[in-house]
Image 1 (cartoon, helix red, strand yellow):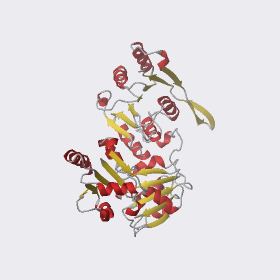
Image 2 (cartoon, one colour):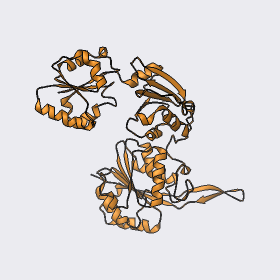
Image 3 (cartoon, rainbow, N blue to C red):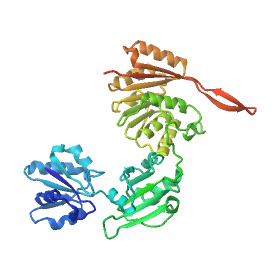
Image 4 (cartoon, rainbow, N blue to C red):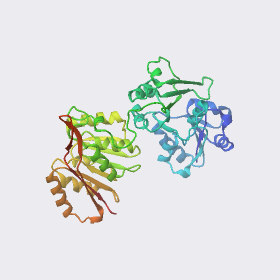
Length: 418
């Protein structure tokens, strides 16, 4: 059995009776130097002590070898805070069955941080930036007034404040909770604009809490990004061959993104569909396939702008660029480069059962080829949903209102029955 003991803020007095028993009865104790020193007074000379290995990923092999060599021994892993809250539990459950693991929860550093600033935290969003890009924070800014961050050296308070200010949140309040539970514990607060150029050095172990209720975030807070927010290959934001807002909203509503979806966007262009898809479905993974060099540059810039780290860019043509991708739950086809039938065949065969495929057609030749492909398939009519979208946008001519029509777009949604 592997016992995983959360140490809370590192005070052995907070350990439960069962956690104490797990530590004192284990033949092998594994932890960081700080963690082992925390429980040193509880250990005896017969208990082996080891530090976590570098790289950390080798831990699973070491544990397996130990359990095979000493099958009757139990071992104890020490964890900071609560091991089931952004802790070691995810790693262990990927490598061992739940039956081999027993977890002993304790108070998390996030919980203590909110206690220190005297804020209820049931509505807070908790994000780990530890080992992750800082721009992962971007999609959370518009709709989450209270955010707690687990950070690393690249997501230090000044960098966070600068990111907030870039997106209109210069009046956001930040609390920096340093070295919680230690003699060096410090709680300080700043407005984002005050912190950007502040030379203060913060303790490497800290929690950052952000409150944006008085801040005006320039990021979208509801579906339907303005076209002008996107960079395009025309050098004019929102102009050119992109899926405009009205079509994009219709396509996304047909796709009905769900948590943990694997999705493909084929012929992604500058990424208007893929980026908004990823922005609103942060637990899904979207693969955007595009080969056009200028559009790829815009796609990458739009991905970074909106912090959609769950968007993976595949710089290749379809269908060959799809060969190594995981099977999708949903597919959007925005461009086929004259290979509609070939791409439809590949996508339809790859699509998982009960998944959906949505294809966008503008030209008459595309519509005709799509109809021909459908005639060759044995797809029930109740699995098809057709939508034609014709949009006119207001403009001025000689000082008068004029409605300029855009090219009509046909969308087809196909659901794959099991």
